[in-house]
Amino acid sequence: MPPGACMPTVVRLLGVPAAVWPLPVVLAVVATCAERPPVTPVAATSASIAAEPPAPPPRAEVAGGPRPELPPLGSAAAQARPEAEVAPPAASASAAARSLDGPAPIRGTDWSWPLAVDHGLRRDVGGQGEFLAPRSHGQHNGLDLLAPLETPILSVCDGKSRAGETGSFGKWVQVVCKVPPSLAGSERLFASFHYSHLATTTYRDGDWFLVKRGDRLGTVGKTGNARGADIAPHLHLEVAIQPTDGRAMGEEHSGRDQSSSAAADLFAGSLERCAAHYGLTVPTGARRARRFDPFLALTCAGAGKPPYRAPRSAALQAASVRWSERYHAGYDVDAATRAPAPPAPPAASGAEPPPAPPAVASAP
Image 1 (tube, rainbow, N blue to C red):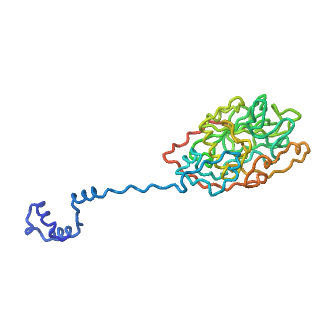
Image 2: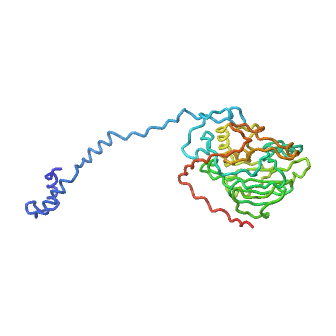
Image 3: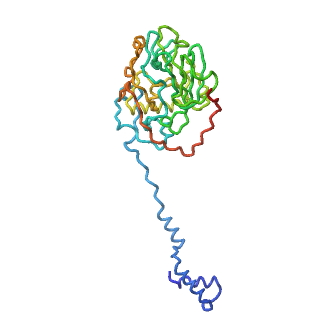
């Protein structure tokens, strides 16, 4: 701006004629007026804003139109679902967990297999060990993993554990832990794993103890209603999903209680997507209320299973059922499996910090 453009304003403000200013003041005013940028009149700016309102941002279009519904577990369509049909990522992990048309989760590495050996499922004169197999009280709530007596039983996750004994379960161990983000997204879901018919337990009955994945919990046995001579030794394993840590710790795994919850619905959606993503089908179903097929749950959480091996004893060989006789997938379910590490999930905006865990006793 030319110096003369702002000089009259300075003169009016100071109230002193410019002719009587000292030379340093004159030079300072001239320099200041020369540096001032031009000012757009307020009226012109307002008119410009009124004449040209900012355009709203364009709406993002969902590629490919509406997302298709995933076929139910056990259907031929789920097994044949091509990789290209996997739905695109949702806006957040929470939205993905809530919607059945979210992305297929990548198998995590947060859970592990409960035995160091794999002799498949139990099926003998005493009954079938598959999930949802017929039972006198209705359906089987877990899996019966065939194993020799005294085989070490391991914790599938980091969490809390307690032991006990009842007439039907015999010696049992319960392990409670968080569902990994690969299956829960940003939601806080909790799993209760129930091991039963054990010969021995590592920790004393009644108290809760902190455990790490792979810790020894006990050994395979034939206690409870597995004492019969026509029942091969095995580990009965159940998994139930609850919305809070306290509810999971209070889970009794009673066959008479077939209640469900919204937390179980969210978990079911993740298993649906995982099964479709990997072409894994379960002919007889993978859910009973809040309980789920442990093989599918552990597989989708990245549990590295040892390779199937036929038992050495003839009696156990006769009771052994390969996984491939029940589960169909785009990979060899009998072979050893090691899942890739999943990418870090996005953090939920405004998520509250997790509450402090309840007090538990130290290991003896």
